[in-house]
Length: 339
Figure 1 (cartoon, rainbow, N blue to C red):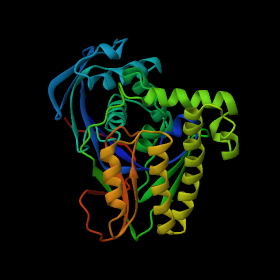
Figure 2 (spheres, rainbow, N blue to C red; figure 1 turned 90 degrees about the vertical axis):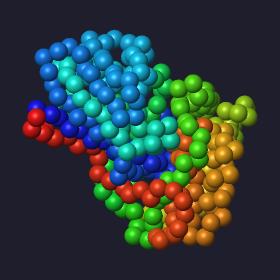
Figure 3 (tube, helix red, strand yellow; figure 1 turned 180 degrees about the vertical axis):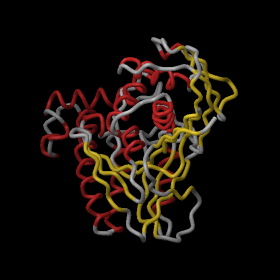
């Protein structure tokens, strides 16, 4: 028997660095992703080979510390094994392969796609939210990065043709239909992005310190932010509070097909990420500026956590720009194949 599990990547249209403070995000699952094909065997080792790395991963089912595993990408697999075992699953060893159509290190959630596909291939059950929560814990364990739940939940809960308005405090997912006149294009800045070793942890700590002053950022208003005496913390909080407002308005703009307003909100989001949250780079800024000056582009911004990676542009259908046109897809899935 072969178990084949597939998980899409995701692009975040708007709402970055809001998920870990219980805020709002608006991603969509992509029509590209990662597939894990796994054959269970009477062994205690999960052995996987990836088309992106010649070095195989061999992970014992009783692994304790994923950070010790080599190659580095296999730590995410090991994190899933640990979390499945902690959740009471009886994990079988076996052999398998990993193939992906996602660019690695581009901010399109290749790690979350690997985690979700691996979890399903190894037998994870439950709702989209339950699988996403397990995989989020696996990523935190494997990478040491205190990520939010957006990436994993976008992968498990994707809806064809829809962006997903996710409330990261209530953990609800509201599909929002993407208007027919809108196309989404992802453009690589050429800067490889990795959250491990980046200032991501510092940004989250800044948000937590700001919340110590004014309470949960999800509940704060812009006037509350101005009460924060420290300039850096005030700017971090201002981004989160204003970004939550932009996400809610952007979802409404999609519902009403107000594409000019939607594009304006993306441009405002990038400025906030650049100036208040300081996660953009010169290469991303130059790319976004070029896109926003291009005829047919409603708006563009960096996407994901920043520090490199990709920009996302929403464009009038038929607009010719360099980049990868992506479509909102359904979420992760699993099936059994005859061996």
